[in-house]
Image (cartoon, rainbow, N blue to C red; front, side, top):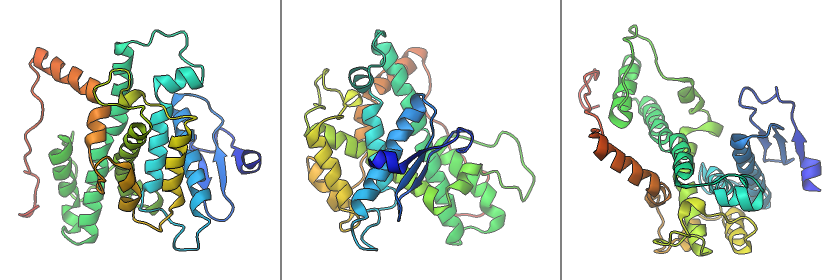
Length: 303
């Protein structure tokens, strides 16, 4: 009944070039979804529905307590669901896709590579954009230094420099930077959501026994918790808390050592096969990893 009344199909042209869904989570809860069907949209829609579910559970609280546990907590919940539905196990056993495909190690490495490009390469970009924005509003740099500071941060954290020398007074930041200063699309939300999403996914998978370190048949990157009531209850507990608890307290019971902080362990374990392959490939090809950071564009000392 809820889907019939609250899920509204959009015209393909309504959501822009990426056909993004529109989510309304206050007052009348509604999802205007894109009717296109392909892999990326499959994942995005699961994330969007997670936001709707989160809104339903936390909106029962009075105003002030019906917020996210932290900016980006909803993104993290959506990321955890996306990781589950993106697995070969889910695609084959729950959706009946890839049934005629011999899914081998090479295909799995390609899948992990695609996920890594989407995730690992965007995390430093989010950090650079947020760092630049914070330095600007805290007056750590003056307007004439914005562009140089941007490229210094890009060089330090991403190993990327300007392709051409731009005119004095120009701003080379991409549209993603400007998008990231809007509250609903803040870079902090995305940065936090990616880290915590993988962390929540790993914690749930360990809790239900679908991920066991050292077990080749229970690897993290193929953990699917669809139709698992225990996983559903764990997710519901986290969503139902709203902002009555800090995000640290919400995730604490899920972690083996009752950790209350962001950790990169989930990334390392999820992408372990890809990391092993890349390391071996670099050794074989004698490829130097990393870059030299030079802050030659710095206009003032101490940046």
